[in-house]
Image 1 (spheres, rainbow, N blue to C red):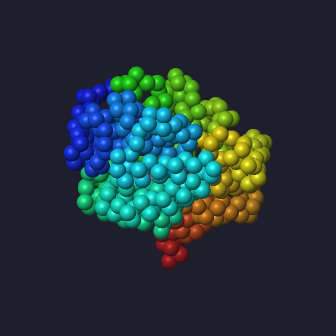
Image 2 (image 1 turned 135 degrees about the vertical axis):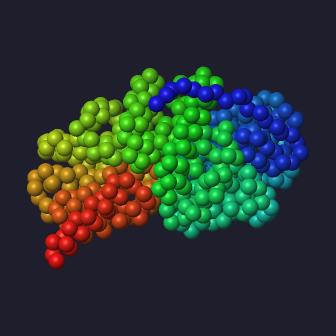
Length: 513
């Protein structure tokens, strides 16, 4: 992959007190706020970036607005909002409260009922008397009432849609997501260039069963906000759900390049790279059968993680390593031997690494090593389950750190059952191998759609289908592969499996004549 960087020209931003507030490369919004013209300009840019989850750059713009006009109340609102990441279930309430303290010390006051309501919403969102789940519920209740008071205000309605999405603490709630999608769709109908509405519409319908409802938004969002790396990535959520691999690749090439352009322009380190888009790009290449290109990405990821050591870099290196190995089946390659420190990483990342280690041991026929990995994964799940169920979370760790969600633990258990099955495959116990493969599929099915590269790197229905195929149980294997394709349309290995199973069934039918 060429590493030549193409730098964009400086952003041209046009904003003033009149409507609409817009940027030719970040979208169009319409929110009247009070402040000096220069401060309003910075605020408008921050608001556009906020809608595209470019939180650091949005924070910088809002902070610029307060430096220009310390009495501009809404600039403090915007800066505090950058510490709430509802889709990612992350929040930094202490940092947000520090902004609100600055707002109080500055003596700033809201200039309208609307501004007052926006600022009051932060008192609900960051109320230290409640834990995050309750704060999210209270925030949604506040926005439900606010949306009734301002039914025609696109910013109120868009943040209401986002509050709905953020109120689902784990997995996907089709009813809640559908409500958010309808709100966002109405905004898009009235303002096709609203970055938040386009963005939240994609999140609302980000699964194979609903993706068609967001296809137009996916095709539009990157054109509306090409200066936001995340906006360039988001369409690929819908493209993955539809199995459109060329489009997945194109979206994430653009998104990753935008992150590199920003990194160079701001003189940042490698952690500013869009590793998330990089991983999705790798997955797109692998689904397209472009293994060499995927390997180049993995090689580059190793360099970046070494040049700028960080938890983020190591996590994504494990993501890329596991996805590459699961999709190529090349468990005897040097990539399978990569030693990556995951000791301080999440249960999700650790479980992925244990699966990699187990598959490597299985491919070598090393039962002892596989058993050791199994025991480590068992201990991890016990520890995380105990922590999630019994500890006083609020008192034990900082408020910006998240415990494992139930879905994280379920996914880890599904991987553990895969590891059990691999062990029984090695020992030749087909009955127990199948028992744990089935148990793993049941756990995986109990969860919601896993968008993007699979969280369980080798989908269990696919692993089970491969095993059934090896046992010449072709019709059963075909049924399992078809389940995979229902959940992940166009997935390469499942598609190949369907073709092989059908071919074998055809041979058996011919032989029976």
